[in-house]
Amino acid sequence: MKELKIKDNALIHKKHFQEVANVTEKIVDKTLEQLEKEGVFIFPELIKDSEDISKEQVILQSINQCYRSSNVMGFLGFGNERLVIESRFSNGETDYFFQYLLECVLHLPNVVELNTDANQNHRTLNMLLFFFPNFLKKAMRKGLFKTYIQKKYNDENIRGTIDIPRHVKNNTPFIGNIAYNQREFSYDNDLMQLVRHTIEFIKKKPYGNNVLRKTKDEVATVVEATKSYKYFDRRKVLEKNLKKPIRHAYYREYRALQRLCIMILQHEKYQMGSGMNQIYGMLFDGAWIWEEYVHLLIGSDFYHPMNKGGKGAQRLFEGNIGLIYPDFISRNVDNRIIADAKYKPYENIRSSDYQQMLSYMFRFDAKKGVNLYPHNRETENVTGLRLNSGTTYENNVSPREDIIVYKCGLEIPCDCNDYNEFKVQIKKNEEQFITKVSNILNGK
Image (cartoon, rainbow, N blue to C red; front, side, top):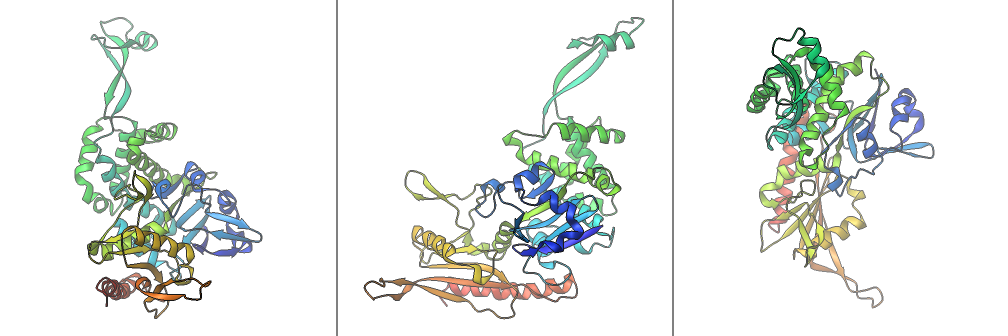
């Protein structure tokens, strides 16, 4: 397996991509929407509702003699080549920061250092497997997926369309039975069979039972609903689901589950040599996962509107006009503060970010705003920017004392020997970060 690791939001010379020329050719200048249609798994699925990332975004853009990566992390594979996109805030051979975000936000265990199946190909499969319980839970909140299926019968109680060729084959000489087909509304359909095959596949892994433990009720429900399950039908079930993806908007969670199951069951096929002409992989919205991580740290003091889930929507104007989703709105009505999670370095928080922050502050009568960002410097103090009043024309520009926009960073540990050491260090840094945010909230 040939592998190249790059950072997100980076400009890299094209010569560095020679070892993975085939996978690069497959993804360069293609949008997220195009890659998604070709088999790449995008997380979260609802990227169309995001202000930070869109289906039109290009993952790897060709600019003269360089390629520019975008605001996503993850991996892309084609044949025996793999392109890994790591967080720009991590140093060293292993991206512990990205792994830590996945563990905190998506409750994934440390798939980077799993002792079983130690090679990189199996680490990729491990990541897919540990996503399965979350997707199964989300999908089954809407109940079991039910749809019409064609069932074949051969008895004397005709309830459908007679299947003449099958009747002649099975009922000659005639003994009273009639072969017929009937459309029935059933839980035991192609999609639920796909989920069942995925469950059985995971069970056979050494850690499979641990993966499925937190969804044991959902697993039991799926097993009960798929009584016609047969191990040797796996290939047929896969082909049917590939031909008929779930398209109804109401079942978008099942669509995401369907795509994940297909990736899990097809993964070994990719590694054994078949399916070599298809791109595959998983990509994660860096801005979204950073925002959700920050919410875990400061959520007790802030409301958290979520644009991807359509929750907590706010409006700028009367008449339901001007949809906005501030990242965080403090719960303290008397001393309202707006916080914005920025997955970018200190120096990249610029004019448009300030303008967005000030518009939110004006809308919610907040005197303070704070941009929350990651950094990998040893020391970085909180910076407060006071809003100017006056104009240069009248030569009376001066900073106001009542409106301040802060920059507050969380230090990401570097040069850690292993993942456990990284976790110990970042826990200490999180405490310092929470203290800095609390001081801003309390006016210290």
